[in-house]
Amino acid sequence: MAIPYDWHPSNTPVEFENTDLPDIIELKNILQIYETKKGPFTVIKDLNFLVEDKPNQGQFVVILGTSGCGKSTVLRYIAALQQPTSGDILIKGKAQFPDFYIPMVFQKYSSLENRSVLDNVALGLEIAGESKKVRHEKAMAIIKKVGLLGHEKKYAKYPNLSGGQLQRVAIARCLLTNPDILLMDEPFGALDSHTRFMMQELLAKLWLELQLTCIFVTHDIPEAVFLADEIVLMRSNPGQIVERIEVPFGLERPKELKRNKKFTDMVFYIEDRLTKLGELGLASAKATDNTTSPPVPEPESKLPAAGELPSQPMKRSKW
Ligand SMILES: Nc1ncnc2c1ncn2[C@@H]1O[C@H](COP(=O)(O)OP(=O)(O)O)[C@@H](O)[C@H]1O
Ligand SMILES: [Mg+2]
Image: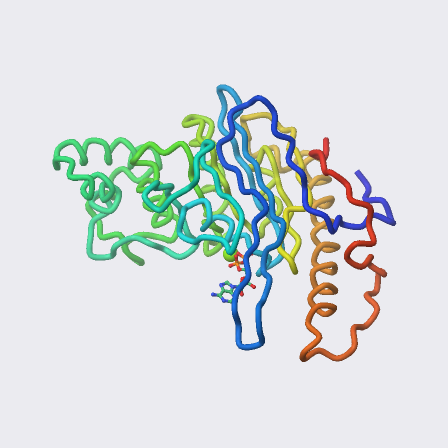
């Protein structure tokens, strides 16, 4: 699908349509302001996000947006690692609170290096006071699932294990508690491309089997299209979700999909939109930073100023 020459990214946040399906994650009217030396800095404003449960299938939502727009912050809200300045965060309709554990896989390897793979994976059950026999049994089942059988006794550190294997450990540790929500913040960002492809396939298979809700952040557009059933685009300055895109490739994602023309068309379509969103974020940053910046130059593509665009409640783009 060609992008219309006069297409401008919205400067209004998405209004998510709330249907009868049960809500899993809902972020409402989020505002995040940081106090900095230069004064208050609004990172996120009017951010809304809704993930509903689809019957008998998982949900795979990928968040794409330029660096610094607030993607990791959104994941931290959901995991109750951070509270916004204002706004509501609901998990299954109830206010998220720090005791409600939602696991997250980070880009940085997060295993305890002085422990074996098995003891890393079993950590959650160990903290919960489960017996060694039970926790090892359960951990071994997951270790098998993520393709680490035979490595369980090794120390979970580089170079004993490769980067891909260390991320398998992190995924296994998160899956041990049988969560229905899994958060992933650029989990494959540090991996070489071949390992990355293998991990994408592993995750696609796990997701199909476990039917969980995965919220996944990446900078890699083909990775997003390969994994997601919905992609949300974020703008920056302020951070907001401005578009939802439905990915229509079914639940199973064989690697051949990446060669499909519809797949590559979608990748380019998203790339164009992200480029425009990047320009918009940059222009807004210059326009709002009146303390240190020189006069704001006209952006090349003459982007509309905030408030110039009609407010458009965004439905999901159909593909
Ligand atoms: N404690 C803080 N004080 C000031 N700014 C912060 C603080 N924490 C995060 N930020 C800023 O918030 C923005 C969003 O951060 P983040 O969610 O990590 O972005 P992303 O994951 O999209 O790259 C960034 O510009 C970052 O610099
Ligand atoms: Mg981040």
